[in-house]
Image 1: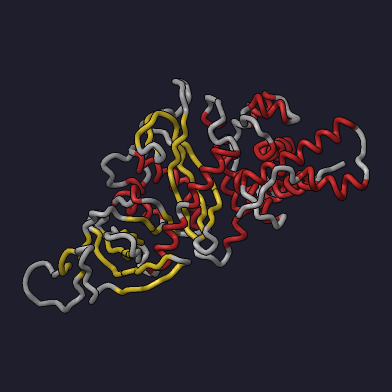
Image 2: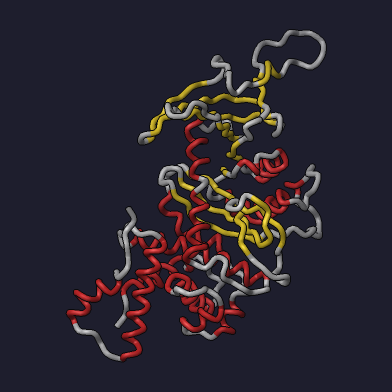
Length: 418
């Protein structure tokens, strides 16, 4: 007896692997088993538990997790739903709790949940966010290392005071994959931490444009576009500083939008950002909320001057979908479970956990089911348990079990979203 959901899951993994021609047959078999275990195992996803629930021994998992794998190429298989949509490459660091002294890369990193620095690990995740579907597809993650990097500094870090800073490390990662990423999209969206001149200049050197948000005390200036006076000295470049609470409506263009029960106004103009040392397109948002006496204006921007204010605003808001990928991976696919002390094995575990979130979502879409990652994992776990029972019993179930009770067994405990 073969369980249909498990067969469909394995076929989906095989199709995603079909674009990689340099993989041996044993590794492909191992990889399919590993990804299946990430979505069927209910315990901790470490080498010992995977050996208990899988068909391979513990040493096979330990050895193969140290091998390199093209995760970006694998996850590009799940980008079919984004064709023709407004997309961007979202990057965001993620703090992972980890104790001990021998784990490579352990240091003090910023935890958004705790709003403080905590000791542990950090990964920088790259995903494609879809502003039309309001969804994110994970591509690749790399662990952050704060120690000084040997060798020649990449050109994208030229002019930086400290090329070994976190911004320098993030630019190095993007440098390693910029050709593959540029083939997908040239827009990168990141939070306000990345609205720095060194990062924007580094992206520009790599061929990317940045969408981000300024701090509330941002220094912006109006650009002068009038005629030249003919007087001696440097030509006039600015006409004054932008006061966020008193915008010059002769320069700003206003748009009005409604989404559901929420309405907001968008103000857009091309301004000079002093902190970035360049001209940017700014989108300032005012939410129309009669219950609040005061609303702080948020200032978003793009180094691509051809984007509309609505696109800048929508793409930046969709950036947060990457946080939901991190959440699902921590809750359901064991993002923090790997206990290896090997850099390559940790990298494999992080990417396998996050990629399995892509796999779970794609599997639910293929079945036409509106299921969360947690519910999809329950369904696949039930299928694995039924498969194991039939395999151990050595009997073929009757037709009634196939057609009636079998579906009830698979969907036991599964709850649809909404």
